[in-house]
Image (tube, rainbow, N blue to C red; front, side, top):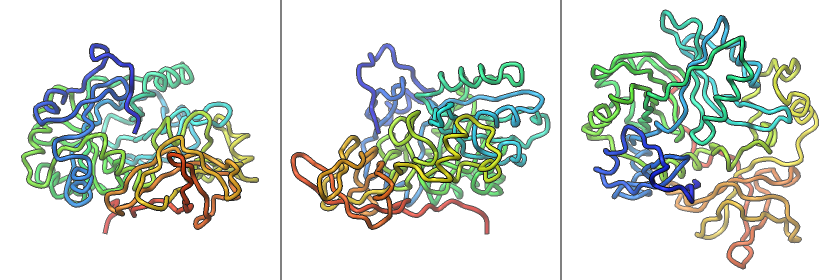
Length: 380
C-alpha cells in the first residue's frame, strides 16, 4: 500500500467517519488525497486476523461512486470497457476495466445494474479513489450525448468483511441474506436507505454498503456494537487483498499494463475476444492470440523478510526479468508473499527466480494466486 507523501493536512479531504476514526484511536495517514486510518490500536496483524475469522468494518468512502443515466447507459459504457455490461441482469455486478487506445488500464472498477423499479435507465459505478476525478472526466467526455454521469460525492461507502459479516448484517437487514456474491439490492437498514452489494476486496464473504454521508457515522457505530465487528484500517486492507491476489491500481496495474499482461483475461467477455469493439482491442486481441511479453505472477520469497514494491527480479544468471509490484507479510500463511511481473517464459508456477534484497540475493518461487483461497458466498 502506498501512503501519499507531500500532502499537507489542510489539503486533505476527510470522509464522514473521520471523527469516529480518531475517537477509536486510529493512526491517520494521507491516502489518495484523504486523511484515512491505516490502523487502530489493535494493530494491522490483529485487524487482518479478525477479518479472516470474524467481521472487519472498513471505511472506503474515499472511493468514487457515480450513476450513469441514459436511454441505454450499459450499451454506452460498454464502448469503454472489455466486459459484458449490456448482459448484466438487474441486481448483478461486474468487475471491469477502463482502457486506453493502447490497451493500457486507466482503472479497474465495479459496475452494477440496479434492479429496483425506476432504475431501468441507470448503472452504478464504483471506481478507485486516486483515479476518480480522472475516471469521471474521461467517462463524461467519451459518452457525451449518449449518457450522463452523476457523481455521488454525498454518499459514504462501508465494507463489512469476514466469515461472520453475513450473520451480523442479517440481524439488521434480513434481506441481505438473499444476496450472493456479485449481487446487489437497495434495502433499508436500521432506518437508513442503503444500496448493499455482496462483494469486497479481502477475499472473504462480505458486503459493501453505500449510504448517505450524513448517516454514515451513526450506522458505523451501530455495526460496531455487534460483538463480531471491529474497525479495520488500510494496512490490513492491503495485506488482505494481497493474500487474495487482488490488484492495487497504480501498483499492480496501470496505463502501461494490459489485461493480458495483468492476468485479467477473465475480465474480457468471451464474445469480445473476436468482436472487439473496446479501446485497445487490436493490441489486446493480438496478445490473447499470440501471448504477451510479460505476465503478473505470485511470488514466494524464501526466508522471513518481506520483498517490497520495486525490487528487481532476475534469472539465475542475474539478468533482469521483471519487478515486484506488491509485497508484504501474510499473517495467515506466516510468511512473506508478493506479486509482480516477469518475462512470460518465467511465469510458470514453480519456476525459481531471485531478487536482490538489501545487498544480498534471495531466492523466490513463482506461485499461483490467490495465496489464500477466497470464501465468496455463491449460494447453497
